[in-house]
Picture 1: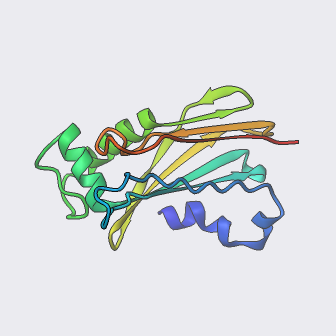
Picture 2: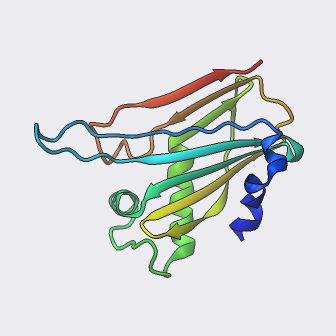
Picture 3: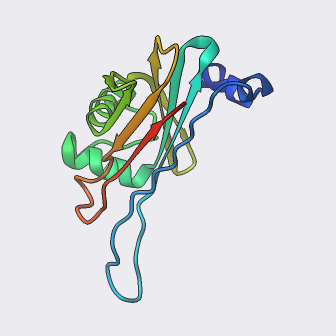
Length: 162
């Protein structure tokens, strides 16, 4: 289902259009002088001019995301076990749309949740913003996982496009 939606990103014709990729690394500070652990979320954002659409893929480690969803919504929740997928989709949409903000041309845009896929230890979450014919400014704020890992630093990006 999602392969068809996002297959165009692998075609050469998309390379002719404008593409914005953002990699957001969300990290914890050192937990000790010797050892530390990093929490990583990667978000790719692509403007598909022909479809007047901004397409977003967010990748999060399943174990970190499951822990967060359990603490926030339902302590019995298990990702990637084939059960409660509708409930999981509701929680993912609710959480990520509250933590991921995008402004295009100085206006905040609503994210339309498309769905998710699991791949090994990663959950891929898909969003889209429709009816975008031109981008002059682009601002992103992503506070995903901050409420679970309090020592993380805030990441945001702003780009003025000519």
